Length: 110
Image (tube, rainbow, N blue to C red; front, top):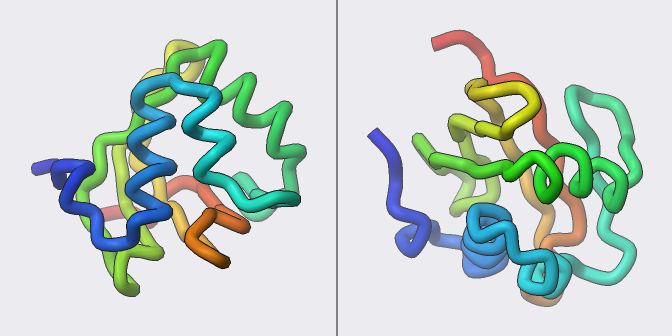
């Protein structure tokens, strides 16, 4: 079962997921705070390089399964043309209505 993106509780996370799923670089950048950072499987990554490779050039998309922590933690099936689909966990830090940091990685087993 997936949660409709428009029902995600945290507006900044909702904007992030909406932009990612639309492959909309401008809206995605607008959802991020200046100097936003991220990590993937516990390793710090360059946000621009990572999003180009894992989102935009490979058509990344998220089907959100659940949200916790007032919408700042998601479990989603993440799919892109490079890796296919995998169950992922996402944690967000929001500052001034924008995503200042996100951490993603493989979700724990069911």
